[in-house]
Image (cartoon, rainbow, N blue to C red; front, side, top):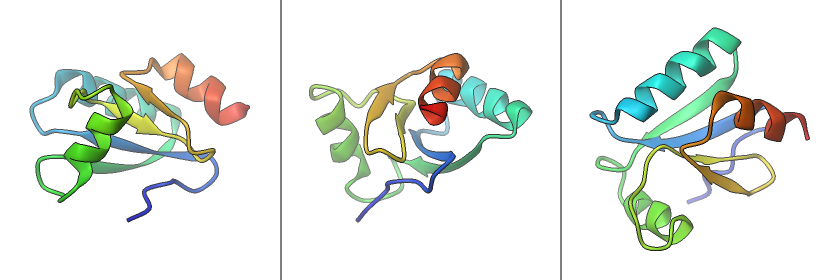
Amino acid sequence: MDFTPETGTITMFSTTWCGYCKRLKKQLDAEGIGYTEINIEEVAGTAELVESLNNGNQTVPTVLFPDGSAATNPSLKDVVERLAA
């Protein structure tokens, strides 16, 4: 399954209990940045995908960008800069 987002948006892998995920979602909403949220505890294969991006750790939020790159627990500034690049 391909989770690469459309230009100008991100895919955010998260869990329901992750405080960092909630904070980033609130910031993205405030900035008007589109995102698709994928709960790694509910979507088969995504926990393993997150592990592969994070040296074996299921760290969330893990963000996937349109260019195929990823970031672990990025700041809003990091997301804005990477989307603008």
